[in-house]
Image (cartoon, rainbow, N blue to C red; front, side, top):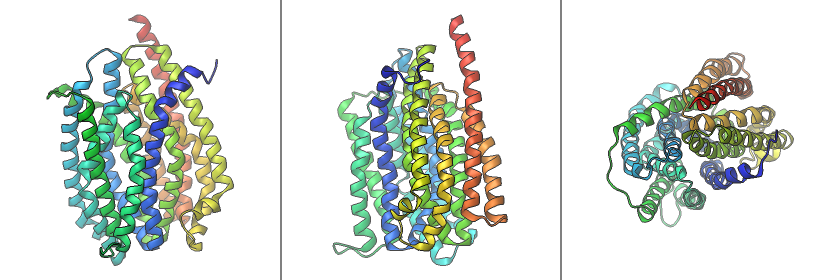
Length: 440
């Protein structure tokens, strides 16, 4: 049995390459913030790391919900049902969910004072969160429109836009943080303002692109919203659990010393840079597997999975080698602080080990989205990250005082467990699908 087949590799890369570009843009937006903040002060990096860790947990709930849009519409396309008419229903869902998330964000800001952060650090965390909260609705709309376009395999323009926004974001960061062109020096607040402006600009451009390229009619389908909730809610829970497993580290270790939060932020950016490949393959698989599932084509489902997994695993093996061999060079991209580098470098061996299992679980999450079986992703993440990673990480990192190394050791172990569980679930689903399609 061939692992790589030209037809499927070509189709997956046709979708995945622009998505990779977009994911790179998304990562570089965060990297740009970290880069500017790191040169402003280590305290600024710690503040935005902690604030982003908390805020992302809220934001990713909404993101998980709208991540269901592309597999739902891809399945409808595969079943030869009309899908274009769901633009305005998708947009309405984004606005309502974004508004709720924004209000929740504003509500928890006063509670940050009870987490025990040093006063100056707390002030910057709250300032960043207040400003970025204003961009919640634009951010939710951006993701929704991208998911809508992705379901029709329109992927180049929205992802190119993300890459271009990186330059704009760095420019805004520079002038707001340091106070250029007659503006006052804003520090951490300037980074938050740049993020808010960029998200708003992206929203306007993406909306105008859709209006220019499609003819939409006002349409209401309550069953569509039920599908978004049914498929998206397990995804949201799974994503939140994963985000908590990764981002609680910045919070609990940041209370001990802000340098651990800064180190974790840099490691996350580096790890996410490789993670974008399997994530992009997963997005492509969600569309292709979704279309094949809608048309009840078992052979195509298996072929897309096999080729997508082969590409992801091959790439992550290479990245594991890079992380293992060049830890000092990678850390040096973001900081010249020796104390910070000494914390980052030992953890990079664990990040290298983590690469392959993380690539497997990320790629499989796209398969489960396409099959509309997202509850299995939720169950797997709950077992591996909520029950294992968080508890083990707290034990090793805080109680045993292994700090960042202990937390990442727990993540690496949990990632292997997660990948194993997902593979077992998938094999069972594929056996059942084969029987189901054969009988119909």
